[in-house]
Length: 335
Image (cartoon, rainbow, N blue to C red; front, side, top):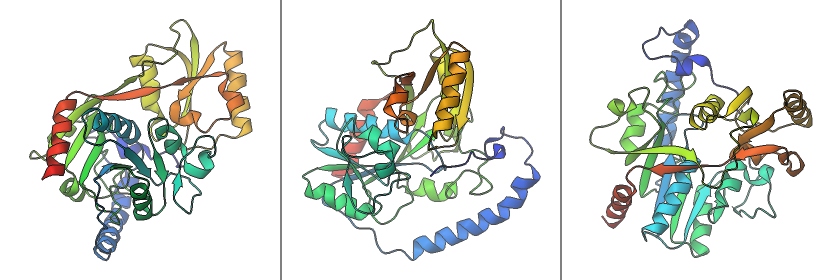
């Protein structure tokens, strides 16, 4: 399974003229919003568990940085004594799982649990479940005392005690339209009403902060190279990535890490790399006397034999005010 690249007009420059395709699709966006709202109103009341459930989601379709935010929150929650045994819960994009799976890297691969799950389990107990309620109940039975949901902001089956929306400062909310005319899963007013707070990642290039509700808290965060990264400044690199917005990764390599990128190859989000893709990448790298470089997420979808010729770039998200965030979480849970 994979996601196709989004239309360019989803993230067109602020103030630019909307193309005809966008104008036409707005009619379908209104229908999508109507159907979604009617569906949500017919859903049963969310199931509440005796342990806290914290959801990290987004209003945009595609990646905004939820998984790095989930990892950072996992560490914060343990560091500040908010919970002793937190666990991750996610649907697992592309996962074939029909039951609740506690992820074991030695037993499960990307087709069974998805690439995000294989990343998260490196930091803590991770459960994949198509049915979030069943997954949460299994986590409770296993003795965990806190659940961090990676995605699920629009899922109403499970009660969330706290909900944070992740916003990428470079992307913002795009053109502000709901699917398919824009990147939004729901109108901003609906998402803003449910959110307890926001994580604004990176430089605010679209004046996102002015859009967010003034009465709700916003925490700035940055994604940086992890301390255990193995990057050579004198090496030529050929970068490739299958992400919702691979250009952001390429910019991070060039502008943030100052790497010498001689070429960049984009694939759709969650792309399942085929042997001919890997052969072409390897041949191109050899021809250019370069080393391949990609993301941790993409590495989860690569065979081990191919990884030997690839530099994987591990990243970490850091909050500017972690103490304030920890206090906010504690106060909301104690309320």
